[in-house]
Amino acid sequence: MPRTDDSIVATGLQGILEERIRRDGPMPVDAFMRACLEDPAHGYWQRAHTIGRGGDFITSPEISQVFGELVGLWCAVTWQRMGEPDTVNLVELGPGLGTLMRDVLRAARAVPAFAAAIRVHLVETSPALRTRQAQALAGSGCQPAWHDSVGDVASGPAIVIANEFLDALPIRQLVFDGGWRERVLMLGADGKLQFGVGDAVACALEGTQGAIAEMRPGEEVLLGALAGRLQDFVALLIDYGPAASGLGDTLQAVRDHAYTNVLDSPGAADLTAHVQFAAFGEKARNLGLAADGPLTQAEFLGCLGIAERAAKLMAANPARAGEIEAGVHRLISPTGMGSLFKVMAVRSSNLPPSVPFG
Image (cartoon, rainbow, N blue to C red; front, side, top):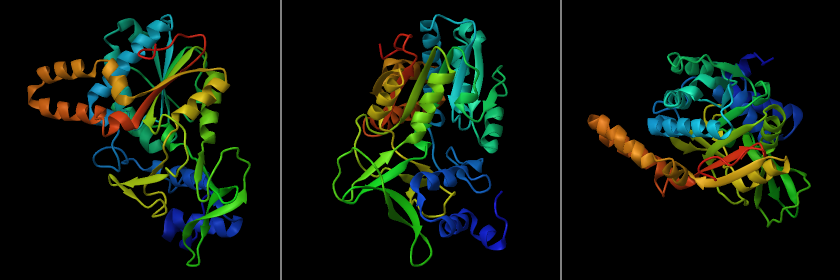
């Protein structure tokens, strides 16, 4: 139960974290990140207006409807490659404002049998965002079911979508100081939060003095849930980060569409870290799953026909042609989202690779 004494209420989550460290000792980075995002009273995801031009950051579905439409057609083709099961769970992890699922379902109508087979499941823990998602999908013709985790979704054929979900999974950080040690949050001489070095940790990676390695235990949990609960599934994972694994501090905070200090105003900014796709794919294969990719977002959308879809949309909406073109360019720009964002598919090993991976 959250504390309600005046001193903690006055300082919000920062006060709670400072008291927790005074009581329990230094806090690992993943615990700090989880508190900032998920605290039931002060966590970032308890806020309703985090995503979009009026929030702190914007995602691909809000930049252009073409993004969601192409993902929707990808889902239809994937369903066909799965053997066209009579029902298929269409699962989105971290659905945000519901924009992506709304556009996916609209595109799915182009394949009536697929649209009829869909059962929508949204994995979302934020009550505020669940309300926004319900509003976005009110006219979709589908009644979504909400879940706290993907493990709560009934087993069976499934297509899973995760756009900018992996980057929000809490990470551990290790610092090389003659050996690997846990990076922690502690209190400085002024009583405020600061980074420090904690206990020694077993780690096989090679490092140099001061190097930072990031560990992502949430990925194993997610992949284990997919492998254990969903039969005949394909998951499309779209996020930012490098194709190859490496060392480095990628923990970042974004507020009002700008980077800010990670330790400033805990709970008031979005905290994320880059996804290392090679490592993620290896984890999937170690669980007996298949992993395809990654491709850059530009390659993926290009193979799905983003230029052709944009041209048709511009011809049908000449007054919005400039806006449509600018949005599509932002999605595939080689100096921006087009190369920074990667796309990977993870699937049951008995299923064939999905388009455009094979």
